[in-house]
Amino acid sequence: MKKLDNFIFDQSIVESVKAFLVLNGENLRKENALIFEVDKEHIFDVFLHLLFLYKVKLETQIVVDRVEDFDILMGKFYIFIGTTPPKEILENHKKELDDFLNVAPLLSINEDVKQFYMVFLMIKTLRKLCPWDREQTHQTLIPELVEEPLELLEEIKRGKVDGIKEELGDVLLQILLHSEIASESNEFSFKDVAITLFEKMFERHPHVFKETVNKSSRQVLHDWEKNKNKKETINISKILASFITTLDIQEEAKFIGLEFRNKEEIFQKIEEEVEEVKNAKDNIKEEIGDLLFSVINLARFLKIDPAHALFLSYEKFVKRVERFKKLPSEERQDIDKAWEIVKRDE
Image 1 (cartoon, one colour):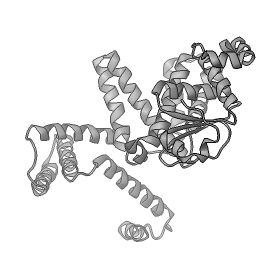
Image 2 (spheres, one colour):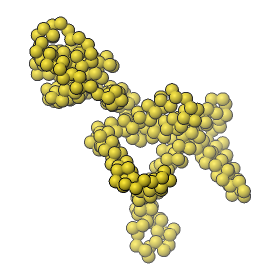
Image 3 (spheres, helix red, strand yellow):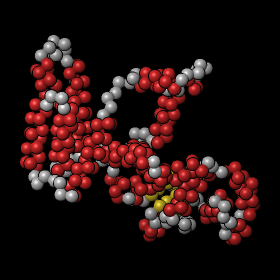
Image 4 (cartoon, helix red, strand yellow):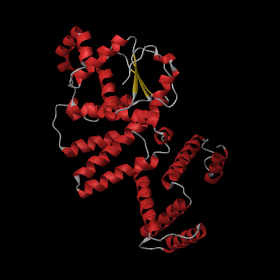
């Protein structure tokens, strides 16, 4: 880590580093650079940012008012991480560092919280410095958001502790990444996600926080479902998950030669499956599954994400239903005509 007086005016120095820890309120802006603006009075927050930058060994410019501020800060940080500060800093700022030695033990933090914060800062860093991470949106991440929990499920089924640990990390990555994307456009932050979760858990556990009557797990589950049903939502997550896993097995089949030569062959296959559904009796569920499998195969062949395509159709249908509900009752008598009105008004 470097120190430099008035570095903002030295463009050569600014361009030579990727990360900045701004502690003096300077309004520093540099494209494609990591910039953490931290209130230097919040020393613990400062230390956590420094710890992250120290762990990832990212060349960093620390922006402070004076060189002396930098020396004192680094001296305290060395003490915070359990390392002896450089001799020069110790000699020049003995009193400040001696005083800090007395309070340093009070700045300890739960290891779980500390490691979470490191990951939290890692996501912020990647969104700024990694081209791929920077390009992602809520929409582009839908496949990963569906697939990662399924991979976790597979590891749980296998009972592999290391696999469960890794896949839980991948699920957490999606949560933090989506939160950071929303934070960048001032929609919400991870703090809002956490607060919302806390409040929901509080409200849905009255038997823990509000009531004095003991309940069985069956009664608790019943109350939970009753609370959930108060929100009118349609959940298609299981459908999307099935689409993703079907896509995966079709991709595997492709690599061993089981692939259609052109889309016309897939259209023909879909037509065959439609006829089998029409003629099905006892096995109609299986035949509908075959039809869906073929449609997903067509989407894959055309390089279209079927889960996302279904989601778009789902959203379109929901909007049409809402418009249909708003039509006068006399117009809704002729459903076909009313539906055409709804589609025309898009």
